[in-house]
Length: 469
Figure (spheres, rainbow, N blue to C red):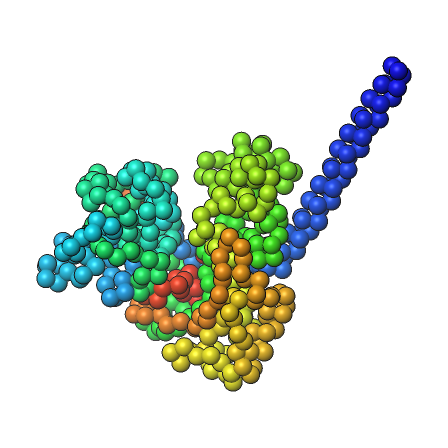
């Protein structure tokens, strides 16, 4: 009997070891297969902003050396500009104040609208900190459009269920300084309308491009003009530091949530230190170690991993993100495909072709979704060629719990309004000692222009610098 028990014990131990080896083999195989897919994606789906609309001599200038070199001021639907360092209530007399900045006569206690001016601050992080400061939920805040982090920006925001005095107290306390940036609120007013995404006309930009070369006709500012640019989605749509958002969206579209998870939390690109080590731990499947290594600012990666550890389900892991944030991944993949059509269309020009669908007389291309229909003629053949290359099935854009992406059409080129350019000079050294009296001056290009909502200033600046960001 004792011999039999020993034999049974040995058999069970070998079974456990065998199952462990099989599981290890299976995991290694899946990881190897997944890594091949990710590697192929990184090679095949590189940022695809390829062409220019001008023949300017491009220069390796520096954009955003300082956040204040990149000023973004929101333009409301009535074309009023939210100027930086300007309170509209102090700026104009009462009878001229537009309705958007007046308290409604019969306020139902629902909504407040206000202006946020921020530097080095993410729009979503502003909402997080306002929710904390007013002791309310993040979902009670909204905005018309997101703004760049590494910039000085203004924008209108709205909130629900907060008393005016509570919100105004945040503004009276002066700057909110956190996360390496700062913001302030002003022009609070009562409203009975919810501020929704897209409730703006566009943005006004004031941008300095530093370290430009003196030589070259492209910097004879008096002779330069820019009326249109190719309507690419800019690099921000895909990720500035790690351009992988569209890759995550591709695999969500394909319902391959496991690969989407590993691309987002793993796949170290342009990183070092703890972040790189954390992503490598994810690649090795050591999620608990990754949670310890990820720094505080990597909160989204940590939330995704924690959600996975809770449910052991890659699809459910993405529920850690709000629906609007989950949809951004798919939106990014749609944008990538749109840019591909623009690249293909460059060979034929952006004038109207046979079969084009026009908007305001301008040819459009599809941001594909389940309602997308091809253009006719040559234009439709170009669209079809791109979508067939990526094996796109429009019906698959109905994605459970991520949104129903119906699709729309977007202009292939977009106007640049009120474009101005000037060359200014700054001394390299501002010290006042005698050795620096003849300090060399450095040329700076100063651009100002306006774009409609949904268009990217970096697509304008790359016409001068050749850089994506």
